[in-house]
Length: 134
Image 1 (cartoon, rainbow, N blue to C red):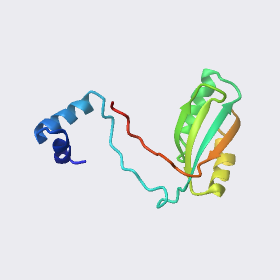
Image 2: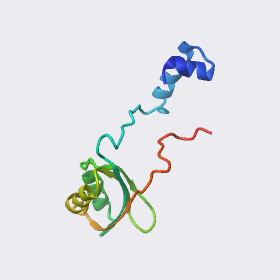
Image 3: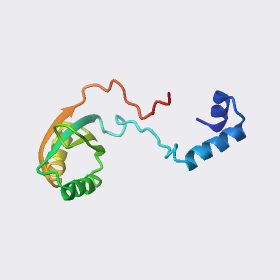
Image 4: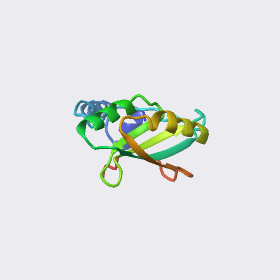
């Protein structure tokens, strides 16, 4: 959204709006901007979530796993979670054949991986990165 459109929407002058946005960035409320790309047009049609259980839960294995995950482009998100498994991965790739290769050659080779469970997404019902402000 342009500064002029934002200013109009919040009933402030463009100058005041620009200053407010600068302050929000400086104070860390706005951490960046991004373009939203089409997975379909980029041949990344298969969205999957993968539960990962590690062999052990020592600080060293968590660190090694976290470092290794950063190197795999298909892993869009990686979250350490509480519960019945250790990490939840969000993965995008072309299709199931590409996912099988990714699973066997990369994910299962990550440090400490004992077991994985995959959930292939059949339909994206809601996909948002907007934080609620109210």
